[in-house]
Structure formats: C-alpha cells, structure tokens
Length: 303
Image 1 (spheres, rainbow, N blue to C red):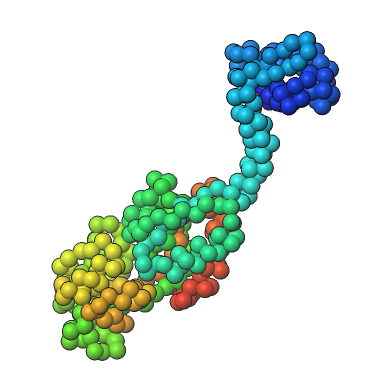
Image 2: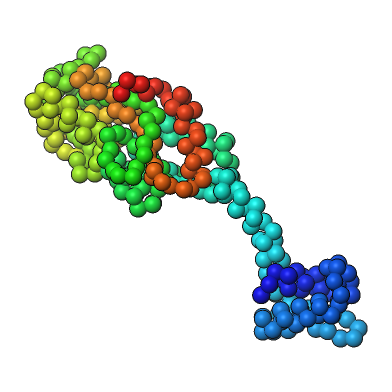
C-alpha cells in the first residue's frame, strides 16, 4: 500500500468525482482509476461505489477514509518529528533522584529543563541510593540520576553539582545536643543508624573512611532505607545518624542536627551513561553549569 494511493483515495472521497479529483492531483482520470482499483485490491474490499452518475463511499470506504487521513498526516509530520528528536526538542528523559537531600538540585534542574525543552517529557523516579542508581543506569531504566558520591561503576560519567557538609543527627536529650559543633572523635562509641551498607549508599562509604582515620568503625545498630527514616529512628533514641546538611529542612521532632568535624563534605552529582546517544539527555546536560551555579553550596574546586 503506497502513500500516493492513499492520497488519491482521500482526494476522490472528498470530491466524489473522478474528474475533479484528477484535476486536483494534476493527473488524468485513467491512472487515477487504476490507483483506486489497486488500493481496493490491497485492502480487499470495495471502498467506492461507482455509477455513471455518481461516486459514493461504501461503509468500508467511510471507515478507511478516517484512517487514511491519519496516515497521510503522520507521513507529513514524521520528518519534522525526527528532526526535532535528533535536536533534543522532543522525546523523554528519565531522571532518578537520591532522596530529600537532593530536592533542591532536583527542583532547579526540573524548572530549567522544562523552560529549556518544554516539549520533552521529564520523568522523575526515585528515591534511590547510589548503588541502586548505577544498576538502573546500567539496565537503561533511567537516563540520568542525582547521586551521592563516591560511586563505583564502569561506563558511568558523573558531574558534581554541589557539596554539602555532613551533619550528625542527635536525639534532643543527647549530652552533646547543646553544642554548636561536635568532633567525630566524640562520637566513635555511639550507636549509629545508617543507610543500608549493601545498597551502595555514597555517604556510608564516606563515614566508614572517616571513622577509619581514628582507628575505628561505626557501631551500626540499625539500618534505614532513607534519610527521613534515619532521623525518625534517631528521634526515637535508637542511635545517632549522619546525614547531609539539607536534611535540616525535614525538621523531625526530637532531633538536633549539628555540624561535625572530621568528615569531609559529601558530593551531590548527576550520573549518566557515558555513551548514551539520547539527544534529550544531552539537552539536560547542557544545563548543568546553571544548576551547579544556583545550588546553595558550591563545589570545592580543590577536590
């Protein structure tokens, strides 16, 4: 079935006259009649009822006319859609995020991307820990993800957007809760509520490395799936927790967040597959300088 046959049929159906239809198509009537007959053979039913006085659509012809118009319209718009997709003007980006402490970057990125590419669908998925995000990227289930470093994964490229100080979450009645700042050495014997160690949480690796400098390791008494749950368990007196500073906006009752020395800031980055050809993703990557510039804590150029 050829597009020219569809166009011939639609023109005849609109004119209900072969002579006028042939004139519109700038062709003679015999070839036009042959095209209609060929189309009817391809479809397998009669689309037009012809007499010496009139041409009319059969019931099958009425049904076919609606679909033929859609097909012709699609044929007209398909090349432009392809050009727009190649330029990243349409399409989709699946963006994962790492939890509430990445919300500022997520909001900035979403606003800027919708303004930059209003016709690209941005799907926000999550929250995921770092190890989970790498697995999703490797399985092509997300195109990019806001992720806490450090992270391990071949074929994954990252761009640091900002760094946040690590704070310690203490129960309000904890003896150290009244201080302005605490040192990690004062916390080495404390029970710790942690993100799961087997799901590749970037902050977990950072905390273990910091403890190791003092010849110790965190006494993890319970694991929690996300930052909000960690803070809730701290408030319940289960132990202390280490969270990035933006967790302060969660304001969990009975919990005090304090700066802690001895732990370096934790980086928030965007990760994506290094060889990903998605033009819409590359349109998102063009905005990373702007997003980084507007995040509350700037990246440390020395790291």
